Image 1: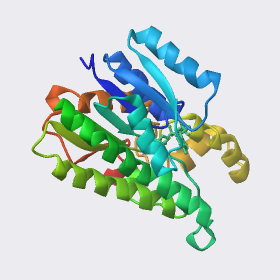
Image 2: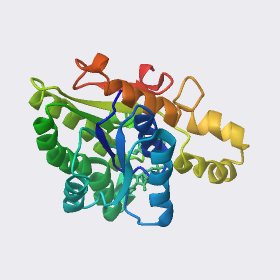
Image 3: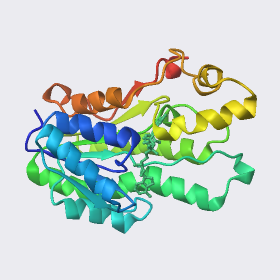
Length: 256
Ligand code: NAD
């Protein structure tokens, strides 16, 4: 059980981050939710998780595109036994047309936030004598697709950071790993289905199989529950010697 541990999950008011937060709370951890907004619904999510799992849950607003805010999130939380670097955005364009501000935002949110949060959290983990860092990378941390230069660069960077920090903490009861999901049916991905169907003049079912899941041999989406369960496993005693590696949850994508 993770009871008594505090888990901070960046970018967790939706999608994978929220699923991982629910799974960690289900395993007994107190959780800190985060995004860059400060709406009633954000705080209501924390209340709902606290009630459902009999843990404490808080929502802390912090913009993961800004280094100081990343570090402030960890400080404000006051404890960090488990850090899940999850916040991420996407933009798709050929590199010679890629907007420089989108490039900077993706590198900052998808990659540098993991640097700032990890740097701020490690001293707390060392003090507690135990820690788990789980980076939500992507199949795009291991392989590439055209038009996703910033995303692929950032996710490869996260995989490299995962290995490096694992070596820096190897002698301690701290592990650092990355989960590499293929396509997961989050609101982000779901929103693209109707537009893509129109663009290719296909049914939504065809878009899912032939366009979105083209690279995913299982032809099924991964789920946020599967990502959450894997994160819980990486935090377990049984996973104590798993460090500096990646776990793919991609229906065979990276086996191709
Ligand atoms: P999502 O849009 O549902 O979730 C992204 C989260 O990040 C949201 O909570 C959002 O509020 C937050 N966020 C965005 N910008 C932020 C900022 N500046 N500061 C703080 N929070 C911010 O998408 P998702 O699919 O759940 O993605 C979560 C992570 O999983 C991302 O890192 C993404 O790259 C990765 N991932 C997703 C898929 C997929 O198919 N959905 C596959 C592989 C990896």
